Image (tube, rainbow, N blue to C red):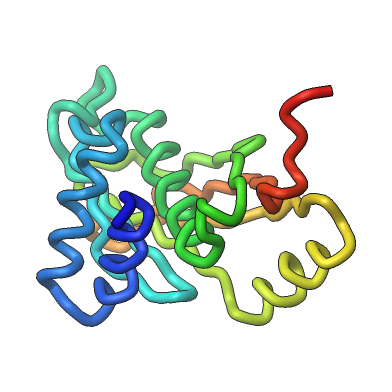
Length: 172
């Protein structure tokens, strides 16, 4: 079983099993070492939703002890990217974030939660249908970041290119 197979297997059951969700987070800590010191965790997952959290802790602080703008951006990217990845297997599709726009609204002095959604209709109409004729598709994902009190901390838009691996040209 490859790492992608194990990740896919854990992801499928993580929405219904606390143990599988815990295992998924442990594996993600190993697979995505950049995120490990920040202790980002997936707290809810299904085919159309990923909610991730960034704790209020020293490794995520800025100079005034709020959660750093880069930690907010990264947890937003993580939830959107993971949602795409669970719908478009990395063995079949290349997913690349090409751009990010983020608007900061409120200073985070508590744990934050980033939520990304993608409906089945959007997957079908905005991604799969265009991929039948186009070599790649660009999609904009929205992630809302709120703190534990429900304050809207940030709204992030990540822009992703999705392409089938058989359409990727690595040499000219």
